[in-house]
Amino acid sequence: MANRIRGITVEIGGDTTKLDKALKGTNKELSSTQSALKDVERLLKLDPGNTTLLEQKQRLLASAVDTTAQKLKTLQEAAKTADEALARGKAYEEKYAPLKASLEDVSTRLEKLKGQQDSMDEEFATGKLPDEKYQQFNKTLSETQAEFDALKQAQEEVQAEFAGAKLSQDQYDALQREIIDTEENLKDLSKQADKASGSLGKTGWSPAA
Image 1 (cartoon, rainbow, N blue to C red):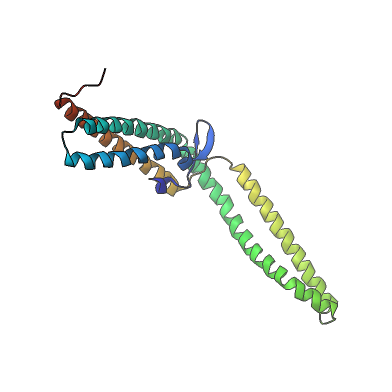
Image 2: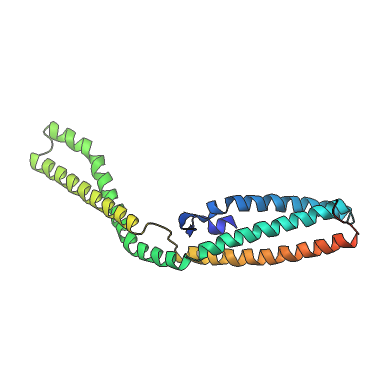
């Protein structure tokens, strides 16, 4: 479920990484295996006793079990630091959210002032704008720029303070659901693999020497 975990940053083996990136190879392998399984299942409906297809099904299911187990291991490794990441994420949002709101407000005011700068310069140069008003405009522009720079610096300091894996409550919950879903998939695939092995055994098939 790539959409479920997209954007989640976790710590795996001491390294901070995007979870969907960490699982990219595993998910790609699973997708390829599942596609092959569907093809085999389609052909088995036409020829249920075909030992070549039954052997392929058994092998593909065994591969899917191994890959899903590997995926679950990665998810469980990420979950080890999930509580810590959730606490860090909440603390980060408490500090970051008000800074972000202030920065957006100041940024809007700064862009508006910059948009007026050319016309103010022109009006002052042609004598249409009194010196006092022109100086006041430049003072306001300078103060707003300084306020923006200070907020930007504060924002960067908060990001540095809370560097590393951070999870929101929604992301934390999504990680837990992904683990449960993967556990259920592993159980289901294991049952299918056992069943496929039994079906192949009934045909009297044995691996080539």
